[in-house]
Length: 255
Image (cartoon, rainbow, N blue to C red; front, side, top):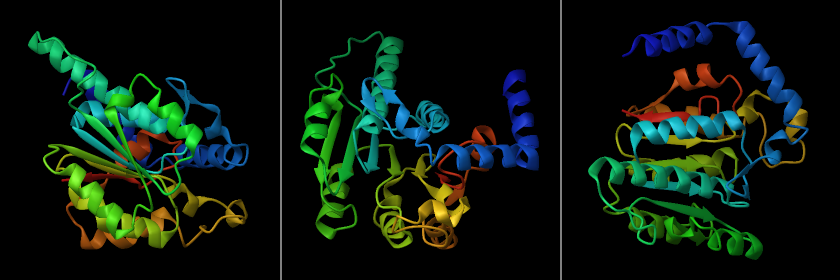
C-alpha cells in the first residue's frame, strides 16, 4: 500500500463512524431522488439512470477485479450496459498494450450480458447501433424465470471472472430470487452489486406509487440472504467512500 493509499484508507475508516457525513449523504438522497437527479446523466451517449458516485465505484471495482463477464439485470435505456462495456473495453485495451498485441474491436474478449423483462424497441435499436454493441448480449424476459436463468447460466459457462449487477424489479422477493439464481456465478474476489438498497432508508411516502418500499426492497433481501451465504460480505469501505449512493449495503464482495 502506498502512503497515499494509506491516507485514503485512514479517511474511509474515519468516515465509517462519522454521523455527520452519513447524515449529509442521507439528506442529499432525500432531496435529489424526488427531483429525479439520477435521470440527468449519460454514458457514451446513452441515458444512465445512476448516481455519478456509483458510476465511479463501478469503475474502481472493474479495474481492481478485472471481470471477463458482467451480468446485469435491468436494461432501461442501456446506459449501464454501455458503461460496463466501455470499462471492459478499457481492460482489453490495457491488456493488449502491456502485451504488445493488436486488439480487434470486432472480436472482444470481455462481454456484458443484460436481462430485462421488456426491452423497448427504440432502446434495443440504440444499444445495437452503439460502437460498443459487439460487447453486449441481451436477453428479454423475467430475470427470475427458470428458462431465463438457464440461458444466463449457460452464457456464463467458461466466462472466467464474473461480476453481477442487480437493478430490475426492486421488491424483496424478486431481488432475493435473483440473488439465489445468480450470485453463485460471481467469482471469488469479484462483486455482486445490488442497486436501490437505499429504498429502505427513505421516507415511506417516497415509495407510495411503487410495489416496493420500507420493509420490502433490495436491502431487506440482501440482509435476509447474507447469513446463509457467508462467502459474501458487504464492502463497508465503498459505502464510506461514496456517502451518496443508491446502493448502501449493496456492494457485496465474494471472499
